[in-house]
Image (cartoon, rainbow, N blue to C red):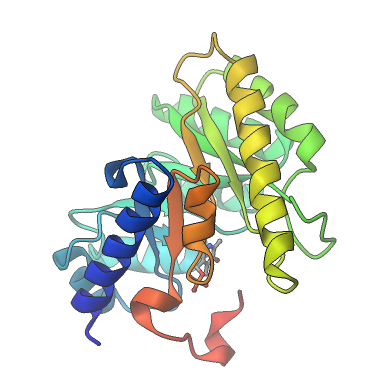
Length: 236
Ligand SMILES: *Cc1c(COP(=O)(O)O)cnc(C)c1O
């Protein structure tokens, strides 16, 4: 299947999953996970209707940005972010989805203030408690959102998660359900925030329909759009 056909098919599946959950398709943003893709592939995806690209690595983002590959779309940063690379992203990406410490938050806020912009962020939650994964513990997410809400230069928009890849599908549902509960709790707590907490980013190629059933507002999809990534370059 062509890239365009894949995009249309996945969009239809997202819309169907939304309707099955009593929601509307327009409530759900398809983020194309473009890691290891070329600038030409990114341009083709945008020409075929992709409106948001998700990038994992600052180096790849920089190269595509320099190429002008993202023209016509927004970019979300979805990978692990080191503090010394924040300067490459702030003011360019519309959302940093992977904030997992106060220190990182402070660096983002300082950079945004220096540029005179407000950077939207999500707090990444390590819902499976995996030692190999970044993200805060579920019980620490509300506090990090509260800290972000009190800072100039950043605006918290919600939560992101990557649940454990292996395991039974019932475990996956439990993780999505826990994320949904956490999201609802945090929205209730931060009713006075400047922006509104309105993003729950979860669901990938293999499980986006389930994520949508549990309230995801953004799904990040790579393989189902672009095909399998070459192993040697995939690295996540
Ligand atoms: C690669 C990646 C995705 C997409 O994964 P697929 O299984 O290829 O759809 C989603 N989120 C993050 C953070 C990723 O790194």
